[in-house]
Structure formats: structure tokens, C-alpha cells
Image 1 (cartoon, rainbow, N blue to C red):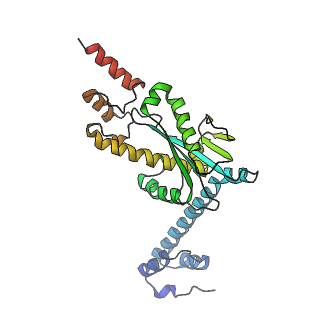
Image 2: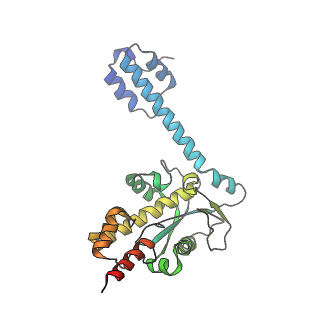
Image 3: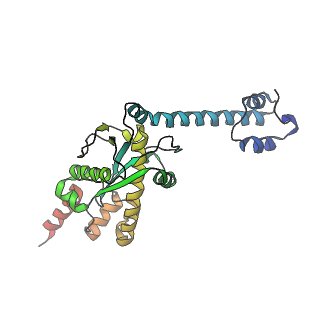
Amino acid sequence: MRPAFNLRALSVAELTKRVVGMREVDPRLLRALGRDPRQGVRRLAARLRASEARAAGEAARLEGLFAVEREHQAHGFAVIAGVDEVGVAPLAGPVVAAAVVLPAGISLPHLDDSKRLTPEQRDALYPQITACAAASIGMATVEEIDRLNILQATRLAHRRAILGLSVRPHLVLIDGRFAADVPVPQLVIVDGDATCASIAAASVVAKVTRDRMMAVLGREFPQYGFGRHKGYGTKQHLEAIRRYGVTPMHRRSFFSVRAYQESLALMTP
């Protein structure tokens, strides 16, 4: 069957306008474009094929991202929560964990480990996730980090996030190496935020939540630049600590912060 319009009667620009606006390009049209004697039309066909290949690859990636949930749901774990945290390494601010239960059949284009996404992509995904999923935030404060150590504070944030869910999960999937202190079956997955949909969703929710908190702290302590570096030990952040000292939001148990305090003590007459 021939294409619905006469290719030869249209310029390259007109053809481009028509086919780029199509949701799906008929394979017969694509073949016809590829056989067109005009180089510009053949280049258009090549771009369309590349675009289709990328879309197919992305669809396969997203399908694979839900494999862990599908496998365990088939074994009777109907309600599965993914858990991830952000803020383990920074010198300032809380550690923030999120627990997310994604509904069956949800479509979340571009869902991925939050570290692989741009801020714009995370901000776009965040309301999509929170609008349809059960989501909960758990935090451990700077004081708790200093008192417990960062590992135990992170586990505390995980526990708070899981217990804060509006539904009780039958299974919890946790990114990392350590189980949470909750009486629920758990599966700990290294790099789970890159391989498991519910953990990836939790990583986005946790990251957006903490980034927004650090932006607020940035306005409260403008000389430190918290809104830019989110509390991580950047050169600018360390220089601000050297010049202005530490704030109540700095983790005094962390080596970089503690070393600064000790150097000040040595300088004190």
C-alpha cells in the first residue's frame, strides 16, 4: 500500500513537518522515505529510524525496571515498597529517605536513578510519582547523625519512611547493603535505584525533597551556598566553613568539619 500522500509533491521541509508531528510513523512510509532520491528526505528517514530505535530502547529499559516488582508480586507480595535515601555524604543537612509504593500499571517515562536525571527531569517526575503512589519521607537530623553515626542515622531514616507509609508493604526493596529495622520482609539490592522501579521512584522523591530543604537553608545561611552544593564538601563550601565557621546544620562528627574545628582550637591562644 502506498503512503496516504504524494511524497514527491512535498518539499523536504513539508515532509519533515508532516512526519515529525506523527505519533507513530507507518513502516511503509518510512521505507518510502528511505527510497526517495532526495538526500534530505533520506536523512529524514534515518533520523526517524534512530528516534524509533531510541524509543524502543527506552521502552525496554522501563519494562526491565519493573522486573523485580513483577517477580515478587507473582510470588504473592502484592504491596511492594521501594526505599532509597539521599544525603549520606554531605557535611551539612539531614539525611532524607523515601519509601514509595507504585501502583500496578503505572507509566513513568524517563524514570531512573535520580543521579542519572537532570533537575528538570526530577522535578517533572516528582509530582507524577506523588500523585499516584503511596509515598512517605523519613529523616534523620544533624543531631541524630552526630549522635548515632551516619549509617545508623540512615537506617533510622529508612525506618521512619517505611513506617510512615499509608499502606503496610508486604515486601520492602532497599537500595544499598543494609536492611531496615522494620518487621517486614526485605530485599536489599546494591544499585537498586538504577535497576528497580520503586527504588528509583524513591530516589527521585528523596532527592527532590532534600534539595528543596537545602534551598531553604541556603536562604537562611546565604554565605554557605547550600542551595548550590546541597551541603556536599565542594571547594566553595569548605572555603565558606573556613571563613565563617560552622552552622547548626553542619555535621560536627564528620572529618572535614571536625578537622576545621580542631584547627580553630589550635589557633586559639
